[in-house]
Amino acid sequence: MEKVQSLRTISTTTKLRIAGYVVTIVVHTVNGLIMESGFYGGAMSDPGVRRYYEFRTRFITCWTFVAQIIYAALELYCEVKNIQGKKDSNIIKKIKQYNDITFPGIVVPYSFMVPTMFWTLFIYDKNLILPAFMKKVVSSFSNHLVHTAVVPVVVWEMAFNPRYTRRSHAKNLMTLAFFTSIYLVVLIGSYYEKGIWPYPVLTYLQGTIYFRLFIGVTIGLLPFYYHIQWYIVDFLKRFQSVKLE
Figure: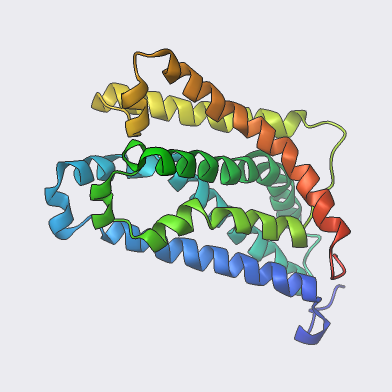
């Protein structure tokens, strides 16, 4: 029978992984609640704010940080069970199989794509992605947590819980395609339901050749980031200063 590990016997790498999961869950959850609370009171008198409120759960940014929370919560559960000596249970094996697909297939590509597209548009013209009136709801700090901090979260995970490149990426890429298809259905459905796109940039580009080009480039970044993650993992392994377990 496997024995419960004492605090002293837990490796530094495991402690760093656990710390990462706890911080991810707490920071994203608290920040999400803070942003949600901003949609109440005087801010709701602004029609633009009300429109963003209606779309708030349909932004890919929201889906991305929620995906990070779910992943971190499942991995934290596995780490606790491992410390308790129950790492071979069926539920842990199933969670690991699930996370071994969803992390590289969904969490990583979207955690890189979202900041890339958001900050590119924000720097060019913030009104295309986050109009000035949204300052009433989303602070600069909260904005960075959901559009910048998602990157170090996945890099931390790749550093202290690395995956190994598979001979076939088909299953991961199919998962990425399936998730993307679901989001596109939600995005298009939102337009037909509300008569307006959730993102101002789509409204601005609609009716031009750049509309399809923008959608194509955005989707095209996903498989690019999927494949680039393995180079990042290999790079991190070379400079790893602690023993990975």
